[in-house]
Image (cartoon, rainbow, N blue to C red; front, side):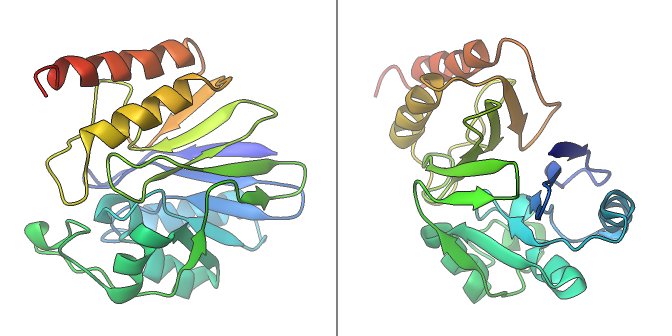
Length: 219
């Protein structure tokens, strides 16, 4: 198993992570889909002839899921999300995905739904789905219980807390999700934005929780 961090080259895109297992491959988050050339080139170079089997978007926002439709068309991959965040992508909802405020459009695409506790087996590498609402109501994280790797989307921010003034966001739910994540044995955080962290990871989760509590201490 190998994790490839694909740093975005377009300022509006989120991070992407390509995971190579012995039998399957998985891309986590796709960016907006506006400028896919660099991402596609990186994927083709890393895959080196292998198929891109799965695509998972951690939540509905266009900077994470906007490229799903184009990449599914290019690679023939199966796409997955939580149901509550997957429906807006399936229906091409450009409002709740935050595409419309930027003059963008979410292209509808068929996605299959992931539920709490589901396992994605890539061959020698198994990720467990964690439902972690807060940033959006349908945000998920992917966690490897063996290595402690946590693919956190925007649930965990390494520099504070991501915005919570968007449709379906809830600081109460985010606090509950961060508390849950802080109890895991996390050895590496692969966030939606910023450089992945492989040291002091549980402390970083607790720091995000503390910042959240300070921001909403009057509620």
